[in-house]
Length: 139
Image (cartoon, rainbow, N blue to C red; front, side, top):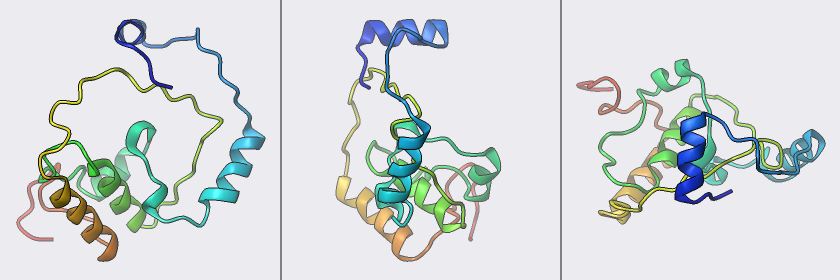
């Protein structure tokens, strides 16, 4: 659910927002996951509302800091986590997602380069990158 600037400020100031109504059902969530996502690769991953364990983030060395603009950086990060064997679960129709208002500055610097980096991660089963949380000389 996309929210405007005023509601974004309200949610951030309060830490939560209970005024939005949403149809949520565990049964629908589980059916949706197994019918549409259980056998999908990273292609179905979207970074707008994703959660992960800190240990999994550290295992892949976090986000790739060579990806310096908005684009597929969240998918590349998620692909590396999935490449380690972590199984994802789609919570559509169960978890509430608020897409907070933000400008789109810096969205595309060289989108083709970023897409190529993402494709390389998927095609080569990359799990750890050198320019992430830690600055590694070689992986």
